[in-house]
Image (cartoon, rainbow, N blue to C red; front, side, top):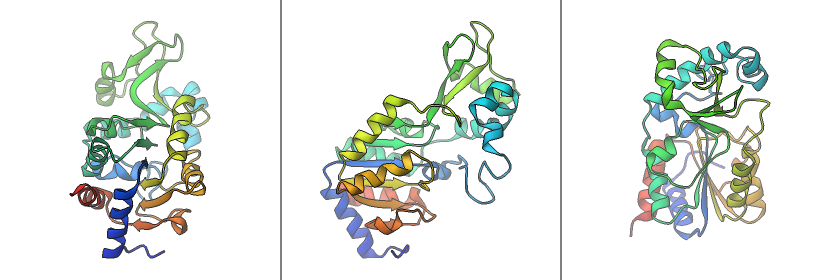
Length: 256
């Protein structure tokens, strides 16, 4: 499919948004890069360019070398603390508020969808709002330690027992939140339109969700700078900055 959408493509996407009864958005790092949050895989800028994820971001690596993990994630944590929702996040929140979006299934851990006003958000890779002690399993709001950690780089410790706090983001080798993934699949399977926004569709299980919906008869719109394995099954593909094109689509779809 041509990756340079025409006016007809834009009109087609707006029509799909207006006609759909159950639209679900699946978002990845590309929706947050306009907010200054780096992604993981982009050549030259991705977080995996200089690090092996299994050496710094696996559950085993965290347990054996937490200081190394916190040194690696500190720049990302700083970006997330400083980031604000961009027009793409806000557009999805407006679509939900208008009753035109079931919710957002996101691979991101930055909380920007909720901060933009989206109420129905499923975070399949967890989040950084809280951390859990690996010794006593107490959960702590990250606001208690995150600013100090990003300033000093000091490993956060549990205020109860002094154990190391692990962010409630999912690491390699760690189980995904079962209830969240189950709910996400239910949303996707019952949808009639999927919006894939800023996701390379390379990380399972989220990468396989749209296939199940397509096989059940749903339509697909992709907004992503790079090709995905599902491009050939998309109704329309947009390669533009999602913070520019998505608000335009939502504005037109909600315009009466």
